Image 1 (tube, rainbow, N blue to C red):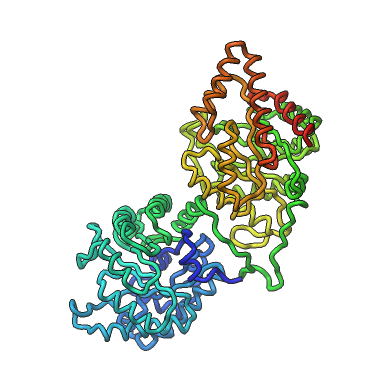
Image 2 (cartoon, rainbow, N blue to C red):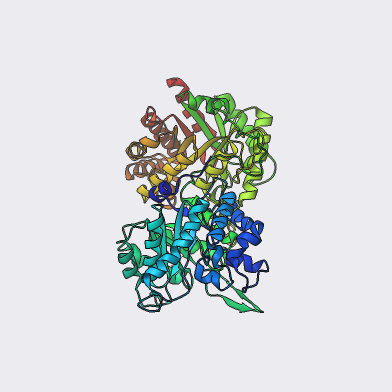
Length: 618
């Protein structure tokens, strides 16, 4: 299956990741700077193919051909100007092989390396003819579009655009380069660049190279204020330093990813890297993009698969688990959360699960180190509960402190152990727990992991490699109906559904009108929703939720009810909390497909009351 067309990519309003440097990687692998890197398309094709392939594996969606200097002027310095078309066509072939249908290929065209009028002796028409030769070779190779990059002279860039447009109507990305002052070496400001390029027949406008991401961000923000086209940014990995006899770029992948985030926040839709960036830099950028939106993946057979390998058929929802069957059939479900013990003995969770099974729970939800406190792992705890009690579990699985490799290993092991239901959450940061100095790993967040599990359910790992039989996870995600930035939460919810979520669990409901508003605004992406129900145990519990838990809204009227009850004693407060929980159950029934009951302090009696109320209305 081929990638989404470049035209569609340019118009879909999503963020897309471009690749990084070619020359830097070749240099790091022993290629001297006096070598014609463009000629390597002919003399060392496997080397070029390997670099492209690494970028695709790291998540790049747009590959640039290895042709930045493959114009007749620069090639003539190596006696290769007669091979201009051949070198460019070969470059496209290599990039397409590496893309394997997972990425689009754009033909890279850089400056000629000579000055054109009015700043040099080369006539504009002569420059256009030189650019046409390179464009012709790229078109012969079957390029999807063009990227004209690292231009400092806006007049030379105009000549390049004119040449490409004379040859083709395929999409064009144009990128100029600026210095530390945010202007080109000719003094053109970022704002002027944007305004000028908007008058041309190009589809994406941006910057590349420059002196690093921090300086580029300032220029990007100026452009974003006046631009009406998609914006792109491919900064260098900082300023190179001389280490020994080599030029080394010191900006780390994490640093580049942090600035990619800022550029995306500023309005950039196409982000990647230039000099000094490597596949590892691009992977970190991809991880961030995956954390804020799902990538539109396309199942395909890659080069590592045998010719007769076919993508596995996804197991229907109603055949993955009993919970999946009820969700698919529209039945009302009731799950109850329990918390694994701090120690290693499973007696408490086994006993609690047995009690809940006898009460008629549909599934026992096993929390995963809530509030960033170490407890027995949810995957193993769920395996013990299913083995000992024979009740289905929903495993809460957090992205915190797990890299991609570890997550995939966990999920494959969980599938082998018979786990079928998973609730994916990003996880609380360590600063909330008793180990605030613990380092944090957030390779991807819940959106990215939902994509990963959805791929496993298709029988493929994130690199499109077959894993054999597909996993059978029923995928749950969290929904925060009381988020401070509700629009942002709705966008994330839509991305989670698009990524493959089968159901959602809300934050605790204390304001049914708030939940109703959220359901109305997300109706177009509707999947089964389970309303969170939290039986309050005390006034302190209510105040904690109201003031210290983001996204949970506890109305003043409920706080007053709990305060009045607390004055009558502990048991009166618990009874009032039970009444409120039953009222919330009654209010959400009919609007959602189930409830997800929390058990503060391990109190199961209120949860059982709620289960009995559900059965009474069934």
